[in-house]
View 1 (cartoon, rainbow, N blue to C red):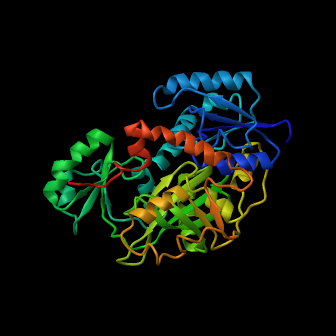
View 2: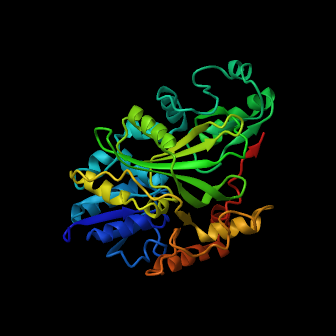
View 3: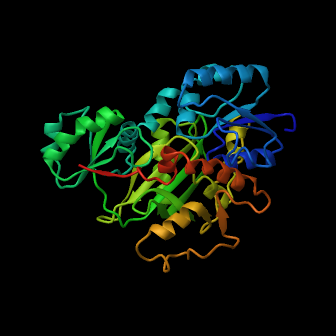
Length: 398
């Protein structure tokens, strides 16, 4: 594989690091791409060359022209997109991109169905996967919906969003009727879902399927700590033996006819103990290092499937392995109001064969320094500061 190259896009995302390192370990030439000159992925010693491209959220058309020109001029065996928006752009333009390189993605219609929470939840119901009670104003009027809701609060949710953005609590019929149109205007197509109380364990599943819906890898892990502490992104994960949850994810992937990697979010409903699907993320999650902690090299499987090889399935993984985003965990420690000193594992459990870190690698400190340099901009950029510290990623009260 010494003459083969891969292009990894959006390497300022933490999820890119295990992808970069796995590709390097396979003997591939790693080309790191980002709109940022300094970031965690750009500073990894596993990177062979770098490319700076136009900011995708400012001008997607300009980025696609740039990417296609780059692929025409350079031999790239496969492209790995990382991040929500980037993966969507690549999936949407995959017909053009596949003329010059390989991808492992479902067709765009299926991709959109997975990214859209309404599409996901409807498919999950067909597959027999439990979900919270959900109502779709595209299928019936708001007046019909509010008259059948058994209890409050409920949530208005955008069909496509990141984090908790746009999610709005409603405590009665009037709040639904008063808030729904505003949420939909600000965030796009939306739906109504029962509120699942806090207290139940949340889980993630990362799994890979090929064109024939054969499972090649699947890892289940729990979300032990979050920032923000009331339900943000996970900052400490642990691999778990939960074949029942994996089976539900696989059933949904088969119903979707999914190809490639898919990431799932599940929550245990404390009222009935049932683990219910909340959403699908059709891209590498920020917690992707947890898969590596479990001893599974999903990146290698993705690459082999993309280039037409038949890899060996990796269906077994190590349990009770931890993945930690230290900066986020420090924020959790200072912001949590209880149990900070009684948490299991302890916040002060920094070392051990069972502990992995999203950014910190003893043989490569470059990503850590790149992340620090990138985030120094928070000092001068209020918008970036709010985004990084999740100051506005809140669930709204109606």
